[in-house]
Length: 92
Figure 1 (tube, helix red, strand yellow):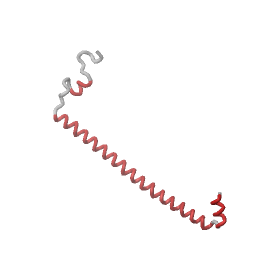
Figure 2: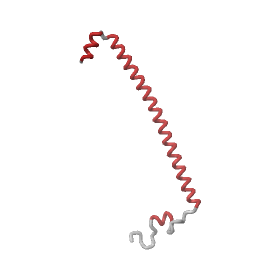
Figure 3: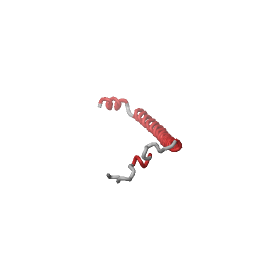
Figure 4: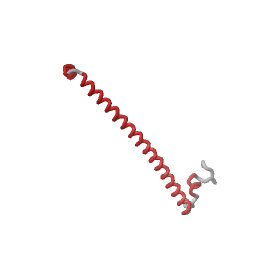
């Protein structure tokens, strides 16, 4: 036998030989620990989402400013470019 004749198996060391050695207090503690762990994870995810939202807002405003500047450049080029050049560039 790998564990030897008197060594408990992994399952027996965690829950006892009968498998029912945990009392209600132990179960409540495990449940409370699980809830606390889930709450901590949710808080971390919420923080990450807030950070992503801020970065997204920043990128959107930068992209909007970039597109506005590109539109302004294009409209200025159209004012400077003679009508003949516009027609020849459209044909190309």
